[in-house]
Amino acid sequence: MERIEPQVFFIGETKIRRNGMNAYLEAKGVPDWHTNAPSDAEELIEVFGRGCYQSFGTGLNPNISRVRKGNKTYLTNILNSAHGSVGEHPVANFMIVGASRVFTHELVRHRVGTAFSQESLRYVVPTDLKQWLPDCFMQEGAEPIQEIFADAFEKATINYEEVLKYVAAIEGVEDFQDLPFAKKKEYTSATRRLLPIGLGTDIGFSVNLRAVRHIIEMRTDEHAEAEIRLIFSKIATELRDEYPNWLGDYEIRNGAWLPETIRKV
Image 1 (cartoon, rainbow, N blue to C red):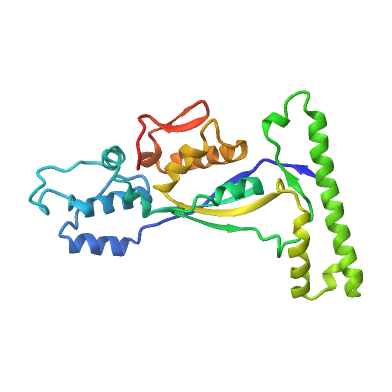
Image 2 (image 1 turned 120 degrees about the vertical axis):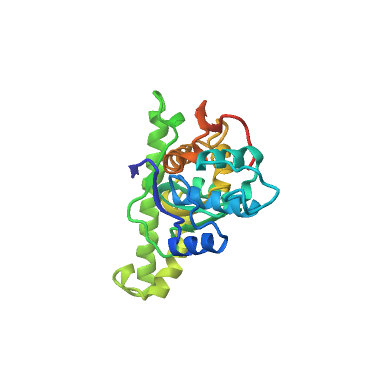
């Protein structure tokens, strides 16, 4: 049994198709409009917002006598006015590696603006059970607890392997891997019930930039579960660095990521 820490990999994001964007701006009569957005995602939020009010300049909407200049100023106003729907267009993609199924069971409760692709223990035979333990079990004096966890994972590994050996004998083959794939899938699907919920696993997670603000604030709160708090602190760090105009208003208070002034988007 190996102790690990969950890892977060920021693997993808929404990108602008420049030909399409330029054609849109041409069609709107503002071919020279430009932004100082530091990322495609933040530019998209601005474009969708300006599209709602025809605020690329003062000549498109007679009701407008002035427009906000600069992406940061524009996005700050969006956050302050709770015009959050425009933040739903860009999406960030993550692979989370070595997180427990405790974490994934909580993560998939966030259904709005998200997508998930989880490692399947119906198809995948785990060869090395890995776990992460919260700090409360890593403090001085908790060594007996650590031994209990290590023993539980070792027993689970042994039991899992023993079941597959019995399956091979039942099916009349020398090794479980000699079975046809359909049979292996059937048996690994059943045998995964022996595996502990704390088993390290992988999950793909995609989220739009409106939803992620809510999730970060909820899941880095001091009362949140320890592992999901750790992982979303990592996600928040990645996103704030990449999208400073959309998430740069966050500050860390008691470990929680919160905007400088409480907003709803």
